[in-house]
Image (cartoon, rainbow, N blue to C red; front, side, top):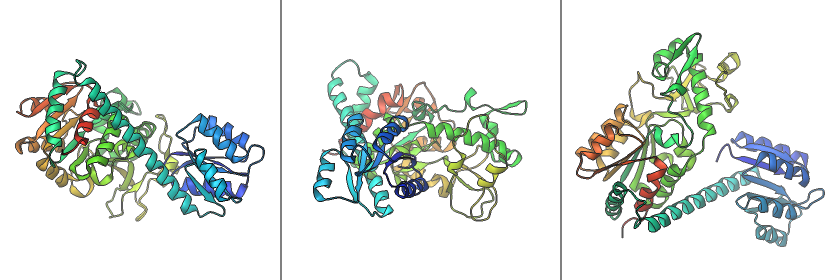
Length: 425
C-alpha cells in the first residue's frame, strides 16, 4: 500500500533514520518521534495509518502508548518493537492491540513484509464488511419500495447469472471516479491555458500536441495526476474488489479511467484491464523498448499554476535511453493495441461474458463501443448504470436481457456485486 502514512516512534536516532529512509524508498509517507509525548503530537497532526512503536521510551512506556493510540483509532496498525522483549511482553502487546511484534536488531525486509501484510488484511476486512453491509441492506430493502423496478429486475437477472460459472465483465468510465471527486476533464475543469489561449482536453490529449508543446502537456497531466492521487476509491470500487475476492476469474474489469483507483482499491492488475493507460506511469516517447515506469514522486504535489521547467524536465526521461518520457495514456490520435491497452483481450472477454455491466460511461471511445456491441451479438445480458441516458443505455434497453438503471455507481454497483458474490448454489 504505497503512499500510506507511517509514524515511527523510537528513542534511537539511528533506528528512526534507517526506518524513515527505507520506508520512503518504497513509497510510504513517514514521520518520526523520539518520545511518547512527541509521538502523540505527531499522531494528531499526521494521522498515520500505521505506527512502528518502540517499547522503551522516555516517559510513557510503549505498552501504555499502544493503548492510548488504539483508543484513538481502533483500526490503527501497530508494529511493536523492542530490544528487551520477552514472550510475556509480546503477548501483552498483542492483547493491547498490536498487529505484530518485532525484535531488535531487526531486518528491514521483515518490517516491509509485515506492513504489506497488515495493510492487505485491513483492506480485506474493509471489503468484507462493505460486502456484508451491502448484502444485509439488500435483505432489508428488497421487499420495500426503496428499490426501483429497474433494480429489482436487474438483481433478479443477476441472481440467475450468479448461479452459473459464466463470467461477468465490468466496463467502467468517468462516472465511477466522479464520486471520488475526480472531474471528467471534458468540461471546464479540463481547460488548460497556454499563453492567452484556452485548450480543450481533446486538443491536449494528442501525440501531435505533445510533439509541439511537451512541457505544457506534461504540466497538464501532472496536475491531473495530482487530482487523481488526492482522490480515494469509493464504495463502488471496493465492491468490485470484494467481488473479485469472492469469484476470482469469473469477473473482469475493463476501465477507461487512467486514475488507477481500481488498483488502489485492491483490484488485481491481472483482472483489471486499463484500456486507456494509467496516469501514474510514463514510458519512452521514442519507443526504445524500455519498460513502463512510475512518474517520479518528486513531481507531486502539482498545483494547477505550476509548469515544467529544467529541473522537472530532467526527471521526465527514459531510464534506458535518456530520451524524453511521455505519459502512459492513450491519446485521441493513437490506436489501441494489446501490449499496452489489452485490446484483443478486452474484446475476447466481452465475447465470452454472460453479463456486461457498463458503469458511468457514455460510449465516446471505440473499444468500449466494440465491447458492448460484441457482447450484445454474443447474447450477453447488458446492464447500463449511468446518471443520464447514453448510447449504452439505449443499447441495453433494446435487448431482451438488457436494463438501464439511472443513478450513480455507488447507488447500484455494490448491490449488483453483492448478488454476484453469492455465486452458484
